[in-house]
Image: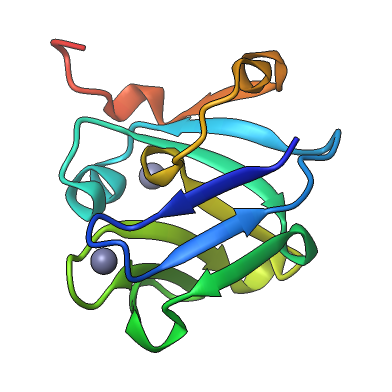
Length: 124
Ligand SMILES: [Zn+2]
Ligand SMILES: [Zn+2]
């Protein structure tokens, strides 16, 4: 499975060349992800860093460290949140699923984890 994604303005595009067995969909309901994504929760795909390739727009990447060791990566122009990396899990990268351009139904077959459910907005 090859996945392609991009930011809202299109300057940054990326490709995930392979979604391996250890990939997982992570839905995070924490208050930090809500603010970082401007959304009620964040939908993520955790993949191996070696399977992620930036195709264009490297010069447009900008980062924000929301907590020590966690770096959130955005487009400096349109501010789409693209992915985050954790220094404690240096071999992995977590892509923001809303930036995918190619949806593939097989994503629903991946393991799915919901985290910080206790912080979820009550109306969800
Ligand atoms: Zn952009
Ligand atoms: Zn979170």
